[in-house]
Length: 152
Image (cartoon, rainbow, N blue to C red; front, side):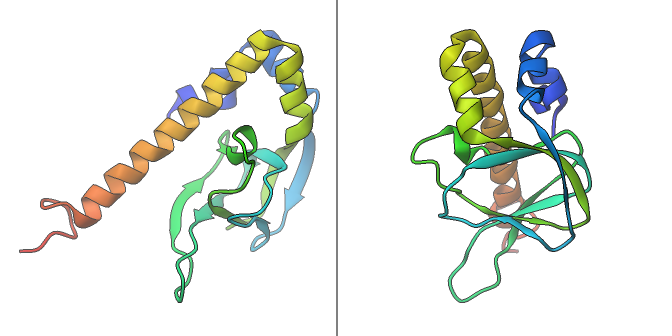
């Protein structure tokens, strides 16, 4: 992921410190499901070490991995947008150490301080935009006329 979407690049000084004051350190074992598509999005994480895969349910098939996230990356953005339901599933593909955030607490901080809220919203928006662009590139590679999945 580009550095513009990592926490250290997106939130500066006081805003980053304010967010980190409500973080808690967690360790997640490999293979642990962090969240399931369609369920309530009540938290999010920033990966310190390890990797988390994002997957999408496909009826009758195993959920394909859409993206893999690592150090410094935001895991979960659905907590920021109503109706606060996960759009994908997520699983630790290696042992993960992360900072975990309670979505209600962070949304309350954003409401109390509109400038902080705007900064968080821009950060989350950049993450979503980056991931949509990355998904588009992967789809073009798979299904576009000049990608690896094109017909000869």
